[in-house]
Image (cartoon, rainbow, N blue to C red; front, top):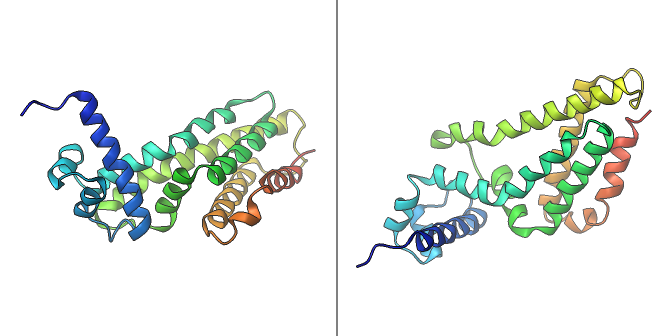
Length: 202
């Protein structure tokens, strides 16, 4: 039997990752098995292990594949010229992707609601939460810049504002992921973000 080409191997890997997302979302990460993923992907269990050492590694591959669009949005937080507008645009783009991209939304749901970070997944939690620290730092930097430019209401603490904005974002994400509220939030995220940021503007 001829060795699989690189393209075929990449296609199989993508197939396994997509199947894992569907299985993790349907059953929860901790109740899922690599056997179930293999069956959903239409490949052998050996094929899954050829690409991924364990379920934790596969979980991170799902996160990387379907969360990459969110990671690209972080470039919006680099605009020091209009710091409050940068946060506004980032939040609006974040919620828009979450509402419009079903695969990304399901992956967010897997990470936040369908995985218990115990045993082998304890170390995975650090990988998951590390970008949050970077985002909070970016918020804080932008709020400090806004204060320097007299664009921020006097007396507001940049670090507390950054934590509050992260809490606002996570709360809105969880509300969208609840399913029952998704239609309520659809079309309203722009107003929500503007209201959140207006409280901070000078």
